[in-house]
Picture 1 (cartoon, rainbow over the protein chains, first blue to last red):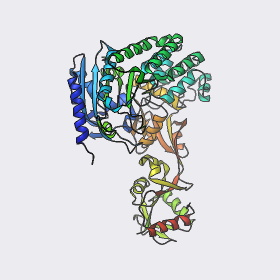
Picture 2: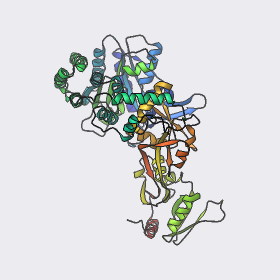
Picture 3: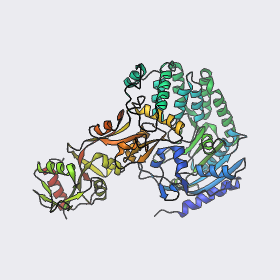
Picture 4: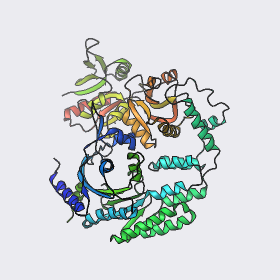
Length: 361
Length: 232
C-alpha cells in the first residue's frame, strides 16, 4: 500500500504556498492526446509513459508531467503575464529502474511572462528553493542557451548547425556529428562511393514506398554540399568542448564563460543573460556561492528545456532523482502554439521525495 | 512436483530442439496426435514437457510456471524487461539463428548507416508532415536501440507478419525485422543498414531465476542440467 495521505498533505501545503505568492491554481486532465506528446518527444516517450486507448479517441497517454497540459490551458484561455500552480499525480514507466515510483505527486510553479525573462527564471528557481530551504539540498543550474548560441556561431553551413541543434539532447549523436563535421571521423566507404558515382541512381532498382526519387536526390545534393564544405576548425571545436566542461560555482562559471566569449563572441549575449540572471537570483536572496553551474546540466534528461535549467539534489542520495527540477521551455510552447510563441519557465517539486528525505521540518 | 521444460510447439524449432535433447540422452516427443500439445519425456524421470508457442515461453519462464525453456534470445529481450534478472542463459543451441536488422528500400542509395537514416528521417518529416514509419513487431528492442543511437523523427508501426511488404503498400518507409539469409528482403527490393544490427539471436535454453524450489526439485533440475551438459 502506498501511503497517500502524507504526500498529499505536503503537496497541498506547497500548492497553497505558491497560491499565496500569486499563482493561480489549475487542474489539468489526467489523459493527454498521444499525438501531441508523440509529436513533441518522438517514439521515446512510449518507453517513459503509459498508453491507454479507446476506439473513438485512439491512443491517450497518462500524463507523464504537467507541462504540456498547462501550456495548452494557458494558450486556450490565458492572459499574460500569468503564474500557475498545480499538484497531482504523474505516471512514468520505469522499465530500467523497477525500484523507482511509477506514480508520484508533483507540485509545480510556472510563469508565462515575456517582459522580464531572467527575472521570471530567478523567480521560479527562488520560489522552489525557498520552499525546500530546510532540506539543505544542493542546487545545480545550467543553461542550454549557451550551447545553442555556440552552435549558431560556428563558421559552417546552416545545414550542419541545424543537424547539431536537432541533437543537442542526444550527446552521443551530437558528438558523432561534431566529429564528422570537423573531419575527425572518416567518411564511410558507402558515402564516399556514392559521392564519386557518375550516376548515383544507376543501381537504385525499382522505386518503392513514399520517399520519392526527388527526396533521395535532394539528400545526395546535401551530402555533396557537405563534402565540399570545409571542416569545422580545431579551434572552434576546442571552444565547444571547453564550454561543455564548465563546472563551477555560479560566479566563477560566469568568469570562465566571459573568458570563453572573448574567442567565441557568439555566446556573448547568452553569457550576459546569465550575468543578469545571477544578479536577479542574488536580488531574490539566493547565495550564488552555494549555487553550482554545470554547462551540460539537463542535456540528457530534460529534453524540452532550451535555456535556463535547474535541479535540487540530495547530495548524499545519488540513487534518487532530483527532489525538484525545472527550466525554460520556449521552444515547446512555440511548437504547441503553432507559430505563437509564449516564453515560459517553470519547475516542479516531488513531495514524496521530500518526505523520503525527512520532510521540511 | 516435477521439473517443467517449455519447448516450441511446432515446426523446425521444435524438431531441432528435440534433436538437441536426444543427442544428450533425453528423448522428447509429442504425445498422441499431431494436434495435441502434450509431450512425453524419456531418459529421465520427473521431468515434464510443456509445448508452447515460442512467443509465450518468456512469459511462462518469468512467471515460474515452467522451470526451463527453449526460445529465441530476441523474444526474451523483447518480452521481458530486465531479462537478466529473470532468466539465465544456459546454452545457445546452434540453430534458429536470426538477426534483428533495420532495412530500407534499395532505391535509397543515400542511406547506408543509422546516421543516414536519422538525416533522412528529419528531411522526411519536414516534407511529409509526419515521422518516418518503421514497421516491426519488436517495438521495445527497436525503440531502445534507436534511442541509444540517437535516431529521432521516426515512429514505429506495428506489423505482426509480412513486414517486408509494408513499404510497397505505403504503410511504412523502413522495416525492423528478423532475417536469417536476407533473401526475402532482397526479393522485396530492400537492403540492410550496414551498421544497425539490433540483435543477433538464436534458439537458447533458458533457466527461470528466483524460483522457490524444494530440495527434491532442485536436485532433479541439477540432474537434468548435468545430463544435458549445461551444469556449471
